[in-house]
Length: 176
Length: 176
Image 1 (cartoon, each protein chain N blue to C red):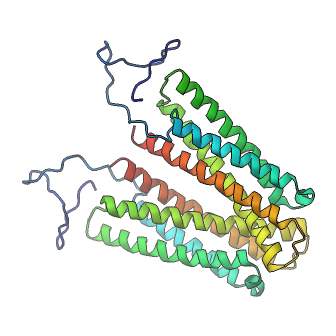
Image 2: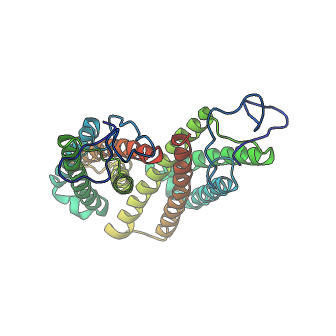
Image 3: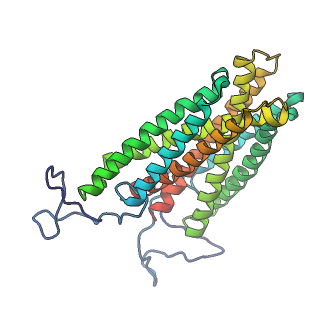
């Protein structure tokens, strides 16, 4: 999908052989970049893992007594909102055969991906640190440690996928 | 510094007007990329913050009872070793006016920076999570919380600098 052909709202798109040829070739869209099926799959994966991590943590009644666990829930809500928004944009781009290779849009994606991936990773690491402290160092676990650890693991998986999205989008921005 | 002129070990370097012209222009070296004064300053900053974070944590006798604090010390030792090695390479490149724009070398820098920045950030977040748990949630701080928090803050600062190095090097790799 090197060029896009919007049927309704043409926005600076050039057709080969037309009056205004592009000054340089567009970067070939790799699967995983915005506006591709790979990119959409990454967004849906991030969303699914974030929802699961949030739900697992909320199942533990005492999670609100620990700041790091509250932060995990908050960051997962933000992650869900971001990934779902980007998934909707990907579906729109795929259904209208429109390319998302606009510098401003890609810069926005890069910044958003970087911020959400950083927050998600911070949530996963702080929750893991506390789960290890309770389970391994203090040996005062009860029956909730499994859920804390599962939630942290799901957050890590969400982070892996958002990091992949970030790297693809950053690569696209750098090679334009 | 778009080209390099090694005096002793020529490794695929072309001189303008020579028999073997380069197939494409090299990326202009931005301050912060490997082999520049900005890059060297970033490496020295990373090293200084990592040493300070490690020293501050080791000052607390009980740090070894918490897994996350031991992990912080281990990751700071790795960070020191990596940043110092790269600083030495930068000094060598600057003193011999040699360019470090070799694909294999840059890929190695990108992977190394990504791994160390991820480990450093994980150490900072897990230590911060536990410091907040002890200080804010349990209110069982003693007089050590300040040192834990200072060490975590220095680790965050080291991470900011290593992330900048990673972004510069990744950009260089993508634009080659």
